[in-house]
Amino acid sequence: MNIDNLWNLENFSIDDLNIHSRKGLMEIMKIKYSHIDKFELWATMPVDINVQPMGLLHGGAHCVIGESLGSVSSVMSIDRKQFYPAGTHLSATHVKSARVGIVTAKCKLLNLGNRNHQWQTKVYDQDDNLLSIINLSVAILRIKK
Image (cartoon, rainbow, N blue to C red; front, side, top):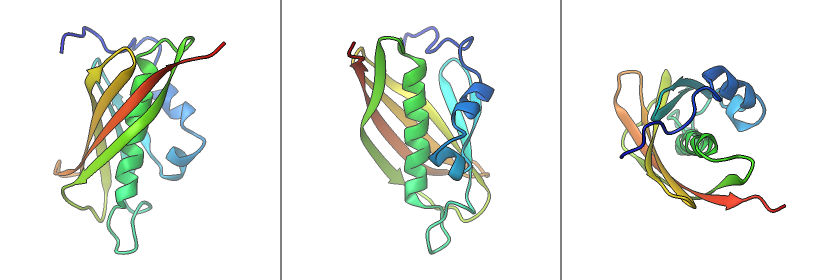
């Protein structure tokens, strides 16, 4: 991919992203942005409060962190005065389960088009074992004035 810098890091910091995530599902699930560089955005999430009845990390929690990372990545790579992102398709492949600890999700760009972005988030356990792969498609829509 021939992109020198996916987003302007002067306009976005980990602290800013976490402040804007204080309300809603990310706060309830205790998802925290943890790393940003020129091409990747990471977040962490505790397992213990995001489990299904069998005590495993809920599959929907994988989807929430994947959609959150992909959506904010699109926000950071568009002109927000003219456009807004809207998720159009999400798929998740679960490879392994987790019962304890903190998971880390790492989001990377697959395609950056003018009207559509594709992001891939991989979720890892504390031992760096791959737990899931989440793919997100995002439509880039023009703000109607």
